[in-house]
Amino acid sequence: MLKLIQVEFLKLRRRKFIWLMLLAALFMPLAAVFYFASVKGTGVEPIEFYKWTAFSYTPWIILPVVLGMLCTMLMYNENQYDMLKQLWIVPVNKMAYFFSKFAVVLVYSVCFMLITAAASILTGVLPGYIAFDSGSVLYLLRKCMEISLLTAFAVLPILAAAAAQKGYILPVCLTLVYTFLGFILLMVNMYLHPLSSMTAIVMRDIPGVVITQPLNIPGAFLCIGVWGVASVLLAGAALKKRK
Amino acid sequence: MELLLWAERRKLRRSKILWIAGFATVMVALIVFAQGQFTFYESRYIDGAGWFMTAAQSLATFYVLPAVIALLGSYMICREEQEDTLKSLRLIPVDEVKLTLSKMVLALVFSVLIYLLLFAITFLVEAVLHFEALSIGLVLENLKTYLLDGIGVFLAISPIIALVARMKKGYWLALVFAEIYSFAGLFASMSSQLKTVYPMTAVFNISGYYDANMVQVFIGIIVLLACAALALFILKGLNRKAK
Image (cartoon, rainbow over all chains, first blue to last red):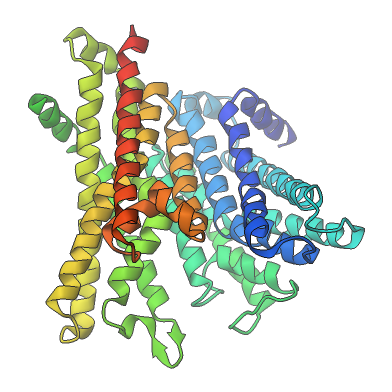
């Protein structure tokens, strides 16, 4: 298993696009700079600033879309060059293959949020919007870890859909619709969709966030778990069926 | 040119992408419908006449449809390279600029069709829910908004499709660019100057979703034409590179 994961990372080495996608992590911190420059001015509460840079649209939209894209690319890679047959001949266990892809998604998600965290601190401290203090930085890092780990699990359905498909178009459109659905369901019912459940878990102790629905953390974990297990089973079945 | 258009249409007949794009559109309508169940001051959003039609077009334009249209366009262009049919086409010989241009025209048609599909769905739902509350003026106004959205969104993302045609194999890039580009419109709409010149929000100025004066509409048209000109300029370099 460890060897498979290592091989997966070696495959990524030369794919420039995967690295380019990390730049999307800088989007919200930069947007925050423009926003605070025109609206608020200096001397902002650090948490208030981080809420803009790291806890809003990044986990709601940007991170899921980027991860969904990554899932599709990882799965499409083998199909495109017809390598899958050779992998089955080796033989590579089909579930181990799936989980090694998931490990890449997990690590990528953590890297992405770490970049977001670093960029938030830099864009906040350098122009002097916020003061640098260890308490808020640790809080930011803890939250970013939570977001990255939970989101990686929440995009498991997309990874499964990509594994079940030969093309890339359906998984990609699914990513867009899935993310959008998660974002809209935030306001309707948080405990139906893994992404909105992830937001419920992350938002539980951010000061100043008003949640209209009663907070149900076990329910949110249950939702992510059920969707995750269902997609692993689906991916297993689909990969077994495919020659 | 007519022959090329006819050929493009025939090529799409068996491809699944149109179904998938249609599926994405239907899903968007469903998701916005779910959001309409949300109650605000004792009344559901969906009960307001015209709410569904207005909300669906703005949310779809910010989050989903530009990326889907960009995917559609770039898929049509990249498949020739990917499925190795480009060589045979060059032998005929087919002018590559004209070929790409006919693909772009088809993408424009599909962009309008996708928006009309969304309009048809939202209109039917509104008619089923409260037919007597709808006035002809309201419906025609929305139809105009959707039509102009379809044309405008295509013009706004045409440089991205052209860029992808230039780079080949880079359809991932088209998707991410288009998604971030349309999503950034949310932030651009916060400032009134930026709102006028940012292509994605200029589309709204023209289509009548935002209240805009004549000058803003005029600037919007110029911005979109500039986008189209940029796309043509990028395409013009295509043939030189191919040799």
